[in-house]
Image: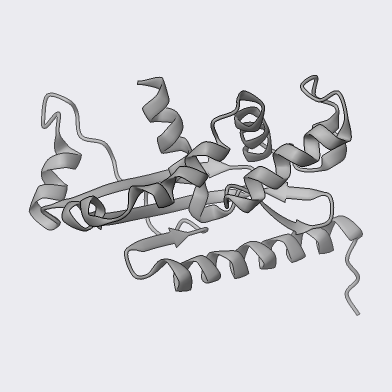
Length: 181
């Protein structure tokens, strides 16, 4: 009989939990979202700027005019992420934008932004997070973690462990990119 070390078993359970979360997000998110946690195709090469500086926009215009999209192919400690999401601009403009306040508000605190960045880059346990200088108490840490979990930026697959759900990684990076531009 094959025996596994605790670390191997924890890794496999974590992978299964991420897959369940990925499938759940696909079911809840409709058919405009695509999340793949394993690279099954080569990463597309970005054309030289001299060839077509707006290659992505021009491709989008040919294949999905009127759609606003975000997409990314990134490698994070949890594994590779290939993700895209698109909405028709008119549908987005017709929605009640107040529903978007909570997720954006949750990221509107410097400590929470740093928490999400640390978790995304591999710091995942409350013990590791408490070692950061930002927290005077465990109460402060848990307050910020609760805000991020309730807004959907973090999940806690098991007690004392946190991760950014795969469908939230690229949107998080897009929001960061927007703020940096």
